[in-house]
Length: 131
Image (tube, one colour):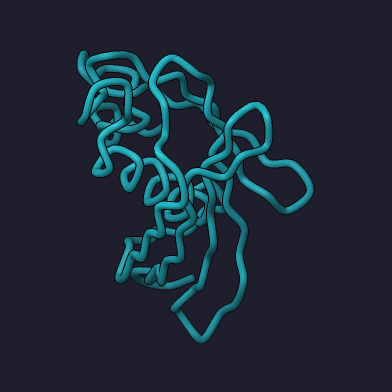
């Protein structure tokens, strides 16, 4: 990770209150895991919806960053399917669904260990500069 992004809330290792996510790519899917604690809740026992949205935004936009592209989210849609519980490991994944010029379409999801999808996302991500 370059020096400019060390303080990213989602993945920055220097951010003392950040999520410190680590990522990997498998079969054209970008993945991370995260176990939310009580400090991440909205209602008792449930991860705050804004944080669920943050996880989806990060996994989708960062996938292009991992491919060497300087990209930012232009549009984000989140569909909450089930409450996301705290204290359970979440798998957050994304994949590219399309491209029009410098605009990429991606999809993502948050999944519990039993396979339950708690949230799904769609994003339009814009590549800045030359690609």
